[in-house]
Image (tube, rainbow over all chains, first blue to last red):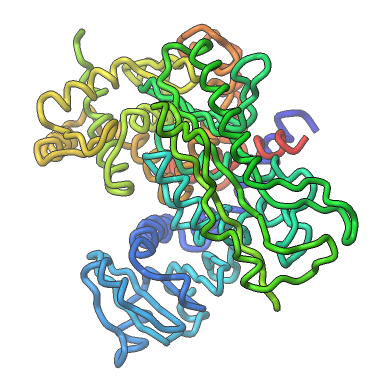
Length: 355
Length: 203
């Protein structure tokens, strides 16, 4: 097979996997136009709806009048003219018909029969956290982006500080949603870390920022500030002289086997060391990139637990969450003495408490 | 410097589409989607000159057109767009009226096809994935490895030949389906670029 033939086969494979192509194939140009309208509407709906509280959601745009929600659930369906008002809806199952005039019809705790619906409408379905677009006989699962509850609800940020705050609350806290962070733990109870988890933390944060920072031209891991100073993440913006250097440290105990010695045991002192290290990077960077307005961010992944030894397989809530609100006291407080040092951010990572 | 009317129209049009999705828009986003629109015009076989303005790469390897920058400044200075937060703007009523006016002109009709396909890809693919994909197309990927600021899409460049080769195979792969909506090949190409970069990263 020639290179061109391989490339053609590759494009065909990609096309065969796409839900947009499925809809075009099954419903033609009109169906594809409706799909575009449906996906735009889902994004707007999910800005307001507490969608993760429902176990089953169907959102559709009809192709035939016969599957209008007014026809199939006349007694319960309610029209909404503003997406904002969808924030008040709660229940287990939800069906929404998006109409041409941007109004939506909503039925709570009602699920239509799928077969007649998919024959006459462009349908999106969310069961649990699995999202699909339905063709006439086939359906395509949407690949869930890491650290996002839905394909249609990826938050973007203008500001690095806000992005870090959201990462703290939505990703680092539970660690379960992130493909990288969920693998940093020694076991499912998240008491100890695996040896050398830092690259997974760095990759997780890099990917989060790369996909979400709106005007960042580059989010790069492991960037060298000078010959002796590699910084974990460097963020650069277009049309701006701003540059951010992010130094990552982790706290807690890492373990290879139960009962063995800890491979690392990092206390708050590690964070203080990280702060000094970052201050040095910033000094070096001032020489290397004098035309940039650089700001340093110390990010601390905190997996500390109270009163544990290496045989511990379970942990109580009081010991597991002992450090939850235990902010680190930095001396010196570089963020107060230098304008290029942001206030350090600590991401407390929750354990799974079973006793 | 004379401001190109195509750059003014593109800035207004792309701005309005991004604004409807993300509430406002930045110059970086306009430049990026203008470049993607230009690539889609090349995919359909238009010469580079059809686009009426050209792109160079910035020091960070992003596409940049001085005509878009001039249009951006011009529209802000005459009140067609206003700042929301630092680096971000949204259209004013005046700006919206101007789009409506431009859309009545025959000269922009064909252009809208490319701008629309680029902007509508946002309804199918998260913006971060689109950025990631386009940064991996042959021209931008090659541009990032050179230090000099230079024209992107230069017809004599091997990277542009590689881009045309990709487009040729993409057209061939989708030939039997005869998609009349340019958005479909655009989606397949963006998805394929991301898959290729994932494969390369995993090697």
